[in-house]
Amino acid sequence: MHIRILKRFCHCIDTLNEWVGNIFCWLVLPLTALVVTEVTLRYIFNRPTLWIWDVNIQILGVIIILGGAYTARYDAHIGVDVIVERLSSRKRAIIDLITYSLFIFVSAAILWELASAVWVSVQTRERLNSILMPPIYPFKVIVLLGFLLLFLQIIAKAIRTLIELISHD
Image (tube, rainbow, N blue to C red; front, side, top):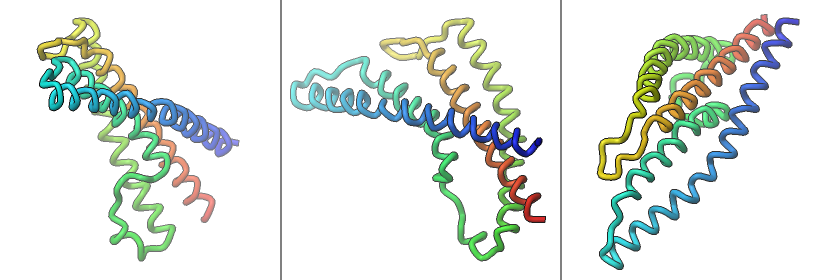
């Protein structure tokens, strides 16, 4: 019964990160359009903008931070397979579980500090220190949410690995 609940939790996290990844990947299109616009204005018309760079940074940051959990869902992050490729699946699972546990432990502390910093940013309506001075607090909220999604995805992976280890005993 408890394993079924854990599997359902993992499925919900997978579905959420799939949904977020599939929606926010489309930000590549406006990012590309902004880069092409800036390059065209700068090098063809000699009229660079003051605002596109700030917007580019924030859009790219959103793509990267919200893509982290999606990437983890599909095991697409870089790994050192040379070390573990010769090990049995059980030993690999144990190493994965240790790695996930370390990530979860460290990430919990990072999330706590990040949430505090984001809260201050939202309260002060923080702005980016640039010529345009756009608000930066919405971006920081997205960074917090993206890191939380990655944290939850790694918890789901750890649960699956633990279930796999338990069921093979």
